[in-house]
Image (tube, rainbow, N blue to C red):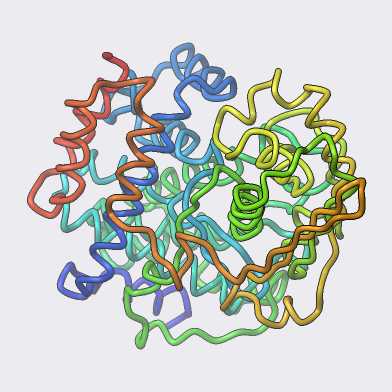
Length: 455
């Protein structure tokens, strides 16, 4: 058997019984968290552009768009994934040399499960498969340092999860993964330098094309059998040699993922909690700040601190703001939190935040880099103009693996994000259905989600 065939066997033979109680709970929490992110993004400018394109192009109305019409499954996968991803508020997984957002898979798996009229148990199993594959490939086959995006591993997970939800046979699963994994290897430039809308749409595109790949396999299209190990395959061209014994894998990796407390890039979360705590404790005036010094681990420094992926003080748009530690720290100090409101165009360009972010200095601390990803260590020092200093050290935040987010916390986040778009009765119905999703058909959930705008 080739490696993709071994992976397909792993996918095809999974069942709900393979999931621990902890994994089931974790999946439900991340589903509710992601649905809150999706509903909260309904008025996003790029989201409206995509909705208009779908309206203009049409599509057989087989599956549901959250908050809207019905369309073809691959287009619904793209749109729903874009909603989940747009705010950059959904979960993350931290590997030593890769970071991904496995809940990016939810839009595709939800759409495929609705199309195939699956129940909640099948949906959770398919989602756990997508999580497991993307996270384990992130562990063993990181691609960021090679110039490729974390959506590369996502193509394997998304195609596998969709294929399972569609009920494909083992050979079709193998072909679905092979097609998606061969065709969709995205470049890391998506997240470097001056950013664009594509930062939030790169994985939705992967979800769209992976869903399309699974349907191609369903209709009989084949893909390269040696996508992993073959000449010019994934290992040869991008990842280098690695080994995952899919016969020994479980479906528990979801329990190692983390939920965001703040609407900001994942590696900023402990820093933002620290800044918030520091300001609440000392009540200093932002007008009197001389400088702010953050020492953090290498990944945070390189991605959002001005390291190898470009400077982070020329902030013009949301996509740049939520990937800039100087902006995020400044927003927390000025506004007391970092939520969608901190990314409104008028907030980003305001003089107070633009001036304060120039006073932020971000450094890598080697000892912190060595502790990542088991911890998210950092320290923050605020130096005042009169010489007084305020200091705090952090190693995690609420939502990290060491301090998991509770059902109450995630429900509160869901309600806060969805309140502008739906009423309390609908919110409670969604929460209750997600909490008991193994007892329901997925179409029951998508029917409610179709009407979330009716407030």
